[in-house]
Image 1 (tube, rainbow, N blue to C red):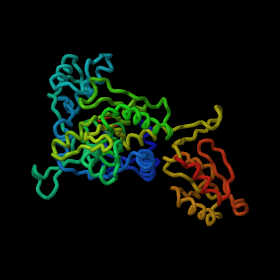
Image 2: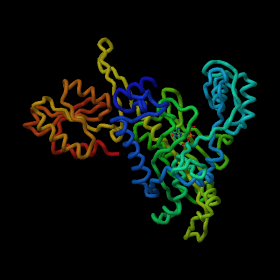
Image 3: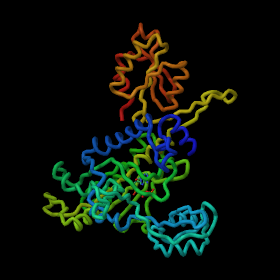
Image 4: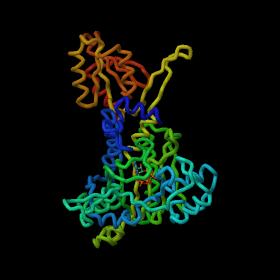
Length: 461
Ligand code: ATP
């Protein structure tokens, strides 16, 4: 993982946040390449989940919502983690995570998921098993207390309780509160889905593993509304759809696994939940949670708001609250997965004379820079710049006229540019350029006038 963090910073993917002030713990800024990569990931999600999908439409809702939203969703009451401090070194921990890690290391099968345990049950387990502080080894913890993960702030000038608002901890609730609006304005009939991409905030107790768990992050969520009774079918449909999306963007079968939640791990309202996990350098981690949430969310909002959120099925002539399938993906987490999956150090020399090139094998649709435009000599700049102008209308291109051509190819490999276009002295005569493929390193001669069609095919997604 250290390698990825280091490479990500050096190349301009991700920098530590507020670095010149010594940083701010677990905040990260996307750099010149990172912003392109992340935007491409979000575009690829939107294209497949919204644009090309006949069932779905999108929204972009406010981050600050009426606090009643969080009463209805349960976030004000129950969205908390069990927190505990070591009395010796003052490190802070999540009690549930300490127990899970201890059980895994010591091969102890827990009868039920720790998620459902009371503070007392966790306290007893830690005491009985003499679990030690992972930082200093002491066995001297404070009591466990529940810590709400929502960030609180104030709207307006007075900082009092009635002006308290929260930064949304998920994008989903903006969708639920707009269910009726969207259904009316889009004239969609059940089944249909509403998707959203946007920032969410959680005051995580133990953020970490680079951008895997942060306090400010982006989510790409779909709430798919369907008729009760058809929900399991749709649950399986979206479960496969999500997996296929990852594979279609270059993730390999053996890099992911689908983990179905056991009965005792399921939220009380959920009929089924599957996590798609990715094999990160630090271990398996959840990328995507896909859940059958039944009619729980709409029912809660209907109760708290007093508004009728039922759907009238005109074919059946009946009203009902639709069931919801929710595939929820973290944009930053999946960007990290694509970074890890694409990174490679390849020996393209021989065993005796190794020549290692570092390369990101990004899918062309995700690559931050699509085409490197390289004049063989600075004397060719004027004509080569015309090629850059032509291609950069469609694609994010980089123009590089510094150093030997071999070095320039390597620089593009290092940032994952799938194609380089070299303009040489022959180009003045044959009006063609050499196109080099990042992965095969093969080169072919293509007429400048044919480049648009050539690349349209290469970047199809
Ligand atoms: P975890 O157990 O890893 O904290 P979760 O089960 O709480 O995640 P959900 O509430 O299901 O996560 O959120 C849906 C998705 O949002 C997750 O699968 C993940 O990709 C992303 N996500 C959630 N919390 C964070 C975070 N703190 N940082 C980055 N991404 C996150």
